[in-house]
Length: 457
Image 1 (cartoon, rainbow, N blue to C red):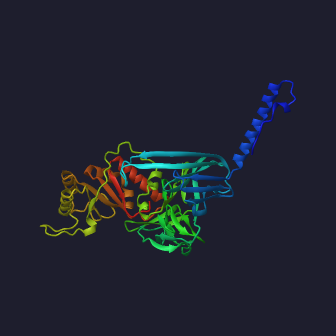
Image 2 (image 1 turned 180 degrees about the vertical axis):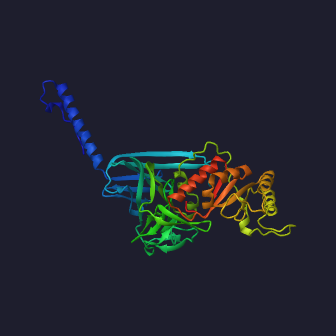
C-alpha cells in the first residue's frame, strides 16, 4: 500500500501551516492503523539460517504449519505441531499478536569438552507471541532447525494432555528407525532402514531417527527436556513421522530389583508449571554423513549449566570389569568380585593412564546399595585407588538408588567414590525423566559424576 501527501494547495485553509500539520497527522494516523491491520492479518513468516541455505516457511492460519528447505529444495512440507494444555490446544487457530526476530553469534567454551574446545552458537530466531498466553520460537542454524512452545499461564500447575508433532516429507524417503516394542525398553535397538510408508502408527522408535532425503540426512531429536516425558516417534499415514509420549504413571509395580513397570497410566503426559519453556524439537540437517557426528544442536539448545564450580568435572576412559567378566589370569589369587581383583584393575588403570575403574553389578547385595558384599573391603579399595590417582565409579540399579538416594550418596562421598553408573531405568515418562535431574543435582552437590546407562534421555 502506497500513501502520498498532496500539495498544500488542495487544502483551502485560512492558516496554511495549521492545516498542513492537521492533515499530516490524519494521514500518519491512517498509515499507522493500516500497518497495524497488516501486522495483525499477517499469517506467513520466513526464517533463514545465517548462511541463507536453510529456509523455514511458517504459516499461522488454522494451525501452525512450516516447511524446511535446503538450497531451495524442500526437505519437509506442511509439518505441524500443537500442545494440549488443560484441554486448550496451543497451535490450533493461532492468533499472532507479535513477531520478533533476532540473531545470535557467539563462541561458547563448554565446561566438558564435546568434540570441540569451542562451539559456535550462530542462529536466527523468530518468536511468535500468540493470543492466549503462549509463544512459539523457531531457530534456524546452518546445521538445522529447532522449535519449541513457551507458556505464561497464571495457573501454578497444569496438566499436559498431549503434544502433537508431525514431520511430513515430500517423498517416501528411507528412514533409519530404531523400532521398539513398547515404552518399556533399554533403548538398544538396531538402526534398520525402511521406507516411511512402511512404518505404522503403532510402530514406536526412540531418538534419534535419521531420514535420508536423497542424500541429505535429517536427524529428528530433542533438547532441554525438563519436568517432561522423553519424546519417541511413531509412523503416520503417508510420508511422515509423528511424536509419541509415554503417559503419566499412576501405579507402578516392581519386578525383581530393577524392572519398575507402569501398570496404570493417566490420560495426560505431564503435570508441570503453567509458566515454562517446553523442550526443543530438533532437526539436524547434514549433507555429509560425517557432519551428523559433529552436529552440536542438541548441546547448544540445552539450558546452560547451573554449576558455579566445575573444576572437579573430569571426563575420561574407564577400565570396565563387565567387558571381561572379571576374568584375569597369572595371579596368585582367585579372580572375581573381590578386593584383590579390583586392586589389579586399579594397577592396570594407573599404569596406562586410565582415570577410572567401574565396579559393575555384584559389589553390593541386590536390593540395598549400602550393603557391600563381604568379598569387598570398600574403604580399603577406595583408599588404594586414591593412592594410585584412579577414581572409583559404582554401578547401581536406579530404583534401589532412588529409594536410598541421600544416604547412599552421602556414604559414597565418605568413601571417596568419584561417580556412579545408574542402570536399568527402561522408561522415559515424566517421573523417570525427573529422576535423571534429581540424581544429577544431588551427585553434583557431592562432586560426583553420573553415567546413565541404557537410557532414552
